[in-house]
Image 1 (spheres, rainbow, N blue to C red):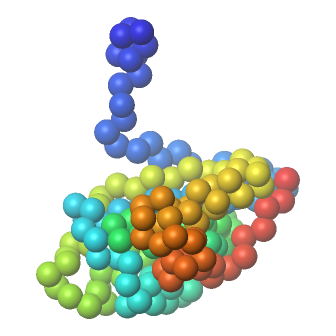
Image 2: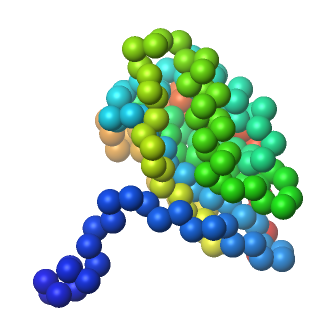
Length: 162
């Protein structure tokens, strides 16, 4: 057992694999992005409106469903233009735009350097991940019912096509 553990040490930084394009399959990526030092600064109306404004203005990637937690964001995104632009570039762009218009200087820097991304491979995977994300505030004890969490939504409907 220790051999297996040593052969696969815990990853300290996420691996960012390039998006795999397939002729008829949708590209949907699940992202998790944390605030710097996990500061609980994100779950508020100002932050949500700021994020949504920046996401809507970006055409490189489209944001679908999202949940904003106090110290991290879960979102689903899909390429907005072709050819597909690097996810890392788009994330850097919107994080920078949000930070520029952030309400308080004391909270800066806003973001951890790294983020977690995972390309989804089926409509079932998308549904399962959304169920997990949607219920995150309930698991954290912030609300009793997922529908009561005010910092979630959907900007564009991301369709799954096999």
